[in-house]
Each structure stands twice: as structure tokens, then as C-alpha cells.
Image (cartoon, rainbow, N blue to C red; front, side, top):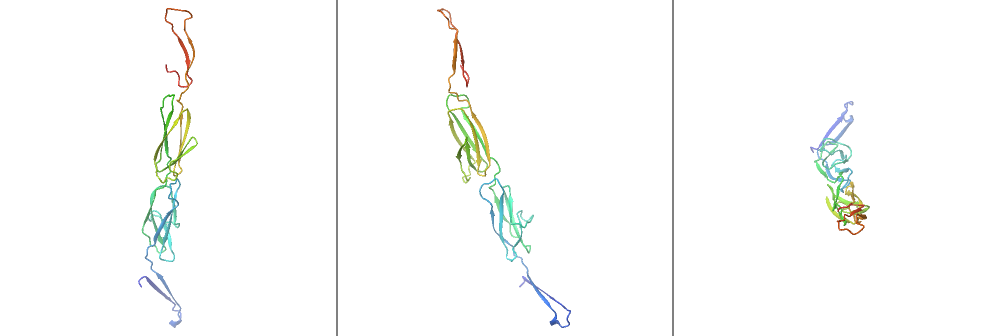
Length: 238
């Protein structure tokens, strides 16, 4: 068998060859590449942390795998796992103790999100009014929105990120002035807080404090009246 090589070692110290000790050592010429059976991720859900890849590989020899590479053979390490902090395609190879190297197995990481979502609140009307104000809430994320909290009340969007919403719009009507605090969360756990103040709702009538200039007796002349009035919120218009 060409894969089996034999070497014999003998001593020539004794004159009789049959008394000379010898040893026969056999070894296998291993040219079979190891194989990568699977590569597992520490998580497949959205995360803002690193993702660890763990390699499961096998070899035809009894010794197994000696080294692992996560950069297509550029560098090698003893551990069968490695963590990655950004999305990328990882090219994995393994090496056995005979130096045989497996074919490359590519694994793509796409579930790392370290960017915070964004949000904005617009008011209609934005000028003074004696009616209600509608707040339009727009939330965005580069990966997947999860939920937001508005003044302590939670609104679920997609808690596990499976729907992959990257933009949603909501409206809410307010009948009085108030401060708005909005915190938006994405599926990876990143968050962003913004605030908005509704302060142009005025439902209180202005007050006339006095009117002066009225004639004290009958007259055939024009009379000019002077009105003193005030408004605590939006001010006097006319």
C-alpha cells in the first residue's frame, strides 16, 4: 500500500544476525483533508455585542484538528472559536496534525447592530391654537425597531425584530400643554431619547381689566374708549 511506509532499524553488535535486536516502525502518510461539519453562532438574534463563532470539524486520523483559521489561512490559532464585533464574512479553515488543510467554509455575520435608532416629533398646529395639537411620532432604525416609551407608556413595534421594521409613524392628540419624553429602542438594545414641548394651546379667554374715556355726561362729540386688557398665554391679537 503506497500510503503505508515501513522503516526497519537493526543492531550489528552481535556476530549472529538472528541475535541482533531490531524494531519495525510504521507510520501512515496522511494526505486526507479534514472537514468542517458546522459553524455555530453564539446568537442569531439582533445584538449590539460581539458574535462568537464555534467550529465543529473532524479528521480521519486519531489525532484530530490541530489549528483553526478565521481569516482564510492567514493566521492560525488553537481555539476552535473566535468573537467578532462587526458584521462581515468570515472564511474558516482547519488544519490537522499532518498539515492537511480543509477547504474554506464561509460564514456571514449580519446581526450586529451598534447604531442607535432615531426619532422625531412634529406638532400640528405648531402655532398658537385654542384647540388640540396632534403629535406625529416618526421612529427609524438601520436594522429593526422594537418599541418606544412615551411619557412612561410603552408602545410595542416588534419586540424580537423578526418583522424588520426600519421606520414607523404614530400620532397622538393632546388637549393641553405638556412635555413629551420619547425613548426609542431597537431590537439589538440600542436606544435614543428625545424631548418635545407642547406649549401653544391657549383655551383661556383674555381679560379686560378696565375701559376708560367714556363721557360722564351727554355729548354731541365722538367718544374715544381706551381698553386695558391682558392675556396670560398667547397674548392679545386684536
